[in-house]
Image 1 (cartoon, rainbow, N blue to C red):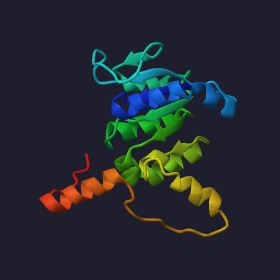
Image 2: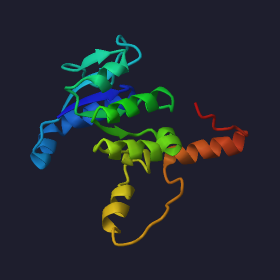
Image 3: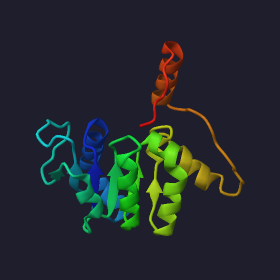
Length: 176
């Protein structure tokens, strides 16, 4: 399985490190060899927190979402403008997408999920909800006999920090 990453900063670099460290175990459990083959970055010359050997770097993220060799796109760049367009293109091109982008899911989640369903691919966003807590999977699988109509809340450190800053400093959360 070939993975293309949109954004190779702290989160993207961390993902590459975790995948590299656990590659043998992931392959054993899934029966699939997972390779990060491409990454879109703002500055190719910037130093990274992960090894980039074997990863084709580009400053044009459209190359990744349109590349037929990419099976899964990890959207880790943030924002709701370009990120939305790239996720839409990836889904429309039949690629599964995984995102940690809270703003994107909060603003456009329903329409992106509908697009994923139309194209028979997955849009996974557990990383955008409660960080490393598998809350969505638990709700979907563990409580599948229940009719849950809505879950609302801010249950992670980043969200709590942002809300506290907004309250304490009278700041608005500008959506971009």
